[in-house]
Image (cartoon, rainbow, N blue to C red):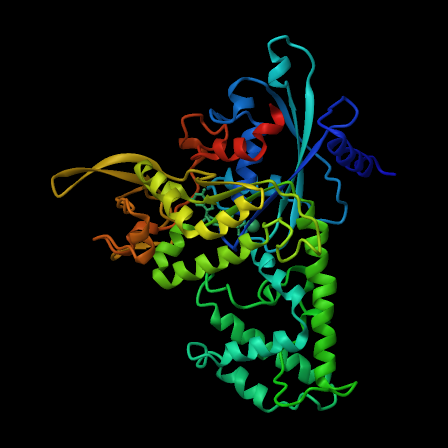
Length: 485
Ligand SMILES: Nc1nc2c(ncn2[C@@H]2O[C@H](COP(=O)(O)OP(=O)(O)O)[C@@H](O)[C@H]2O)c(=O)[nH]1
Ligand SMILES: [Mg+2]
């Protein structure tokens, strides 16, 4: 048996027996990092690992603050067939000259970080060091939205999908799809080319329905828009059909081909993801780009709210939950984090947290009730701005200073990525309900230009220490702090 498999299995066994670390087998914690596309997963993982390995300043992470975190290093991950999270490459991007944000990724990946620490109990007596493996699993939040499919058969899913595409607000974007659908006889003999064309038309409609990254919530299957390594495989080449009055379909009909593929999608794509990845997680952080949604207006906010409710539904672990009969999830701590808080002045960070709390209120109540601890935070894994003061109309106002990315616009000005600019982000409303109803300041949309990552050469540390961040340490403390106590 390869050593990594051995340590993994042994780690699990140890956890079951009790917290019992020895030099031979270290316990393992599986930490899930998820969120919708562009929410900041890659940047978060890179910053977290960099801070722990390079000894970043993490005052609210007890083990680090108390000097008990002795060493952190990467080790080969236990799951041989999951791609490795490309930490070195992402870090090289962020610390390059000029620094750039890492490429976007659309699949799951994994990284094992090992911590050596002294437990608080023994620290004063200076005895022993213990180890903890942290297996960090990065996966698209969109995939969680497929969970309800496991309970739907093809006929039911088809009916719902077709009804949805006929809804008033979808009619225009669904025009081509509805036309193609009306020309199809579900009982006609199966034809590969026709199945493929129909599936493509359906996917084009889904893509169009996604006005931007947030309008996702009612459009499964999610892999259609985020296929990862499965692009083009039969399990992803299906579409709903209109059964009309029909209730039975011939073997060899288009309907039965589509039905088979839909079932294959559930069995070979959705179910294994939940069973092999999701159900094995111990702790979870869900990253949420609340500011982008606020910037997109009330429709974007309510889409985000709906998507978050569906995502959080997956973490309900009680006996009545949607899927406790299918798997036995064991996540007992969840952090919901509003990312990119460095776009705001620090006075607004608590307000951002309040907005996220409100947005996820009902879903959190359910999760709490079911036994998981949930904490809401605003954070910036990599702080791309610094705070300053600037004069405007004779008044001194708090502002943030950063380098807007090349091509970003403020008013009539287009940036080239090399000039710093002071921005008045405006305060978030004190009443979070106001923010959800739509929030505009006198500066209109200029609050959320995207910034370049900070230039290591300009940091006080000269680039040798990890990037500055906002509340990253609190996230780490909540996610793993108790395991280092
Ligand atoms: N200012 C700022 N921007 C961030 C931060 N984290 C992510 N971003 C921005 O969000 C984009 C998407 O982040 P990424 O980690 O690739 O998202 P993912 O798709 O969830 O992995 C990045 O390219 C950055 O522009 C942060 O902490 N601060
Ligand atoms: Mg990513």
